[in-house]
Length: 586
Image 1: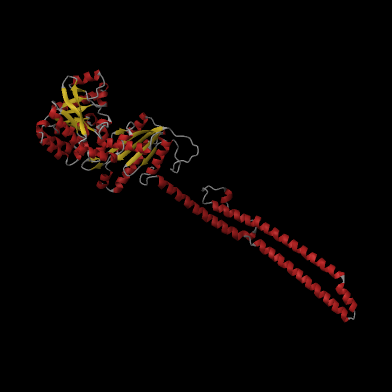
Image 2: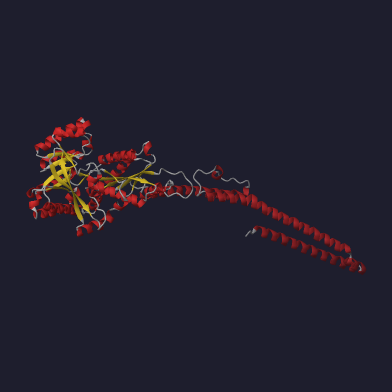
């Protein structure tokens, strides 16, 4: 409610009333004095005529009109001065105050008319101008501080405080935006419904997990581990800093998991980036435990807009389990893994435990022969029958989950028990694979010895096959396994030697029956003089130790003839590519 206008109008009305009252009083007094003066002179009739004369009434009307006109002029002046004050003075002050209100909402680069100090034309407003300018400067400083705090909070909301990479919230929003076909907003939130340019409809996601972060924190100061993680993040950022990696999103999902979102990248380029990242991670490994190095697990998955985030994360988790089971920082490709078999470790726990209790496992055996006609031990795979009538699940799908849940030793012992049962009704020998994580479990060797002690007559036809990676990373366990099985006549074989040639230096310390070499090494052997020389060295070392050498994955007749000429037997039947994730997991 405005107070100035009613106040001034009230003053004008009061003035008008006072003037009218004064004029009326003066007129009455003047008439009375004139009449008294005439009576004093004995002019009674003149006095009466003076009181009743129209001249006085005309004079009174003229005075009233004059005073009313003056009152109207005064009222008009009041209205004009109020309007002038409202438009010229109060309006200018209000505009400057509104400019100050916009300061916290505007950016720091404000227009010059808002930034410049206020210099009023009226000298009477100098004090008000000084107060407004002082308040504006304080608001500018407060606005700058608030802007800096907001930017800091945004950075903290979307980035990992240790590595300065994007955090899980930002990365998952970027993944959801990629699957939904919409770009991510700069603040890390999902976009609104406004039309925008669509990102590529496909891409890949790579997750790298540091498996020994807890052990690293136990063996060295926490600050050192934090610095190592920061350095690793910087090296990964450098790999993705090229033109091909401008659209990539590199983030840290939690303490031990790094992830890379590669939109619009096809399989060859994604595999190349994954190989480069794997090489950096292997080069940056730190010692942990008794002479070992910390280990990484890597999982690469292709996505499309029709995929669901939950299914994609389950496939990534399943790939990490496969890589963990392989044990050599290999990249597990999970693009072809179905969602119903990649449900994660918790979905497997009940299935695996129930299957162990109800003996739902069985062996799938296949004969194996060498190209020279010699019969080799049957190859056996442990299969899982989840429920009656359901299709069996191969080991490359459930063994990684068993490793993560600590059930790999139970599964391997189940495979040995079934192999001994098979030997009771079948002639020949059978070979069963043992996963590397089972060797680490303290009770595995003891339980295996008890099982073999009851069937010594069958144990001589049993072969256990371990991964070459176990020799380099778990040599004491492998040595104990070989030593404890000597008395039972069980023979030990080694697979994937081509992926871990450093194990050759320790073969003389182990009692082995054979080694298997395959994968890309054998496939390129015919065109690699260095590979042939290395193969001859391995063959000589193994022959001196009485260890037979077999070759898998022979691509053509030329390579087969070359291996036969070198004295290496080529396996046929039941062969699985040694470089494949299936073999690594099983």
